[in-house]
Image 1 (cartoon, rainbow, N blue to C red):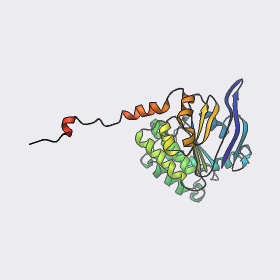
Image 2 (cartoon, rainbow, N blue to C red):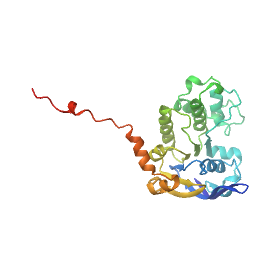
Image 3 (cartoon, rainbow, N blue to C red):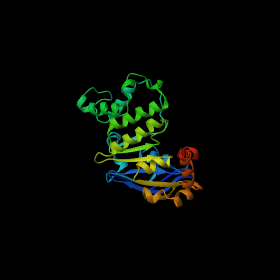
Image 4 (cartoon, rainbow, N blue to C red):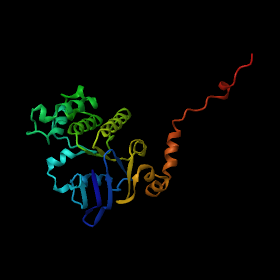
Length: 266
């Protein structure tokens, strides 16, 4: 569905990405992991044509640069970490913008062209119906993230590019978001590429991974072959598995006192 070959991004003399290659097939959820500054978000920007790049990006076996913006929007949806909110659109209006690539006009009221069923499904999936008439400027960071996720679901592309999809979300909506994305991915001819910092959800939901180290590709392939102790320790410079086990131990129930375990003799 999407193939990236020798992706390189430079800003002057500074190389941000250096010859990164990967691909996704239908049903894949590729997790892009690595420390801060490794180039994870730059991959999302390059694939979505936000920044200049070297190398080849093929979308359904066609150079992505040959697609018109409207054609590309029908195939790829993008969720960034930060959203520039300088307009007072309602929640509903923002979600409906996900269908602009299909409608004859930006705010077309043609229910057939506009995909009204997809819009309503996206609203219900993300639990936003009580907020539809509210200005997006009045929402919390987590609510804003859910609105733009709903916009993506309404857009209904083949490939999702997600930069920290659970950003700003509390635990309940983190779990809901990853489960919703997993359900979305279960339908035919779909794939997801996610930038992640939290390796727990990456292992739980992804089937493939790309691990970056200072702009270079440390490893890529099946997630269990990429997120290994050896790879993670080299990239992060620490014993990642030991750290995660230590954090998990904080949630272990303490053993009850011995006096409560022993039976009484009458």
